[in-house]
Image (cartoon, rainbow, N blue to C red):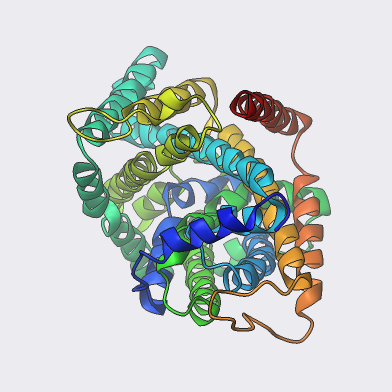
Length: 444
């Protein structure tokens, strides 16, 4: 493999062979749905409706079609590379350790911006219930408390962090199911009818924000080394999960917009809560605000349980200074990585709004998707296969899918701003400088 020695690949495979392949289609599908549906969907319907009005559901359809191309690339690559690491493993096997490192950096930037944006959603939701948090100073204090509590929990032990994630996993879905099952009977057809197709700019601007609600599959695919028969399980699970997620998102937008009409654009912090108020009164509004709060907190707890491990891995592998891989002497947790990650996320939460952070996160993840789609093309051209020698996920016209996916990514990215590209470029440049400096020192 380019940039990788045969010994390094074989070593990775030997490590992964110690894992038990126990994740089947139901488990992987549920993991993807859980990782995808988060706090963003409680806020995004308002932002999309602001740009597109009654045509807002079209943005969801566009995102779903783009994601079909992306996840097809993931399925093709995942059926050929069964190493733990998901998208990063696909990129590393195709292009070598340095490009894999860049994919990891893009993941870190994606995760930090995403968790920072969701903390904004969390504080906004709590502020709707406790108006004292509308004060800027109180908002910062609330954010600091959220991060501080989660650092304390996760530094004390991964078991405590996992327990916090388990507690909120199902709780975030219950308010959504209530909203859909009751609200569907209160839709006004005139509120969701439109006569003119939206312009390309308005649609693209909406898609670049809405992608925040669809990403997450890459996180769920990280345990690829523990998936049974990946050539069969990975493609079936990601398509099924994407179908379930798209249906839920479309119903949420249709119900919210069908109840509130164009007024949904005025409730940027809690559009679903305001829609629920129309047919369930204050109880409905409180339940949806609580749901948004729980979902946001659940996402943050899950993210701070897992994402800092990427910084720990960089330190362990020598890509960044080794002290980032420090392990707490008593609790045996990556304390420096956890603290570093949360400090960066806190700074982003204070300095940006949810919409700004969502778009910045989306630009980073789309650049990572770009690398993965290119890796998919390379893996197919080189006919890379899993250790079992199977042909992988194949179908007629398969080779054109990566090209179509790359075109879709470029179209979406064309609607981002120069500032978002500059931030990503600066982060990658600094990371690259550090990477090669460490490499030079190691060689000496």
